[in-house]
Length: 174
Image (tube, rainbow, N blue to C red; front, side, top):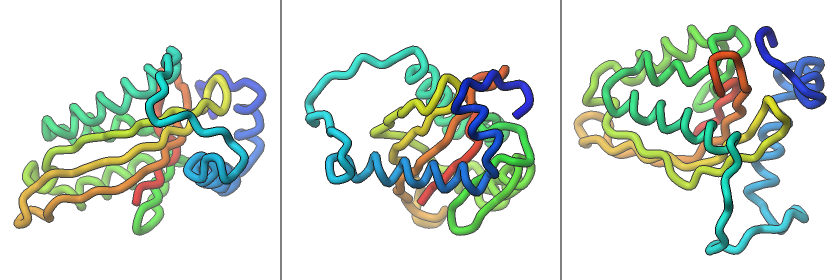
């Protein structure tokens, strides 16, 4: 992972194949989603949490993507992904590499109208190391029926801290 400053977990990710990283990320996402049933203490719904610099920086990266999307700037939105052939997007199909992910976005959202207005909510950032985090959240896409209609879903993202900031290396959206 050129350009990163991996700690112990970063070295672990480098030694694992991307399929192992994906399996780990999905497992962590399911564990966090299961909460107390998996033996992880859940915070009460109304408890306050002071966000760390890492959490704030990851949320800031997502909000920049949201802003780009809502401005009709698809290229700016996709800059939230790491420009690497190893970057993965898992949705209805698996897209491998930054270039393919960008092409898929251009194909699926060819006009400003089909892009609609995007909102991210319920963001949770879970650090894995100094250079990797998992971010869980929900999205809502608001658009007229003629342009595809509204869409809602959930996502789990693995971010890597790079020289260009926090970048998505694995996106699982449903």
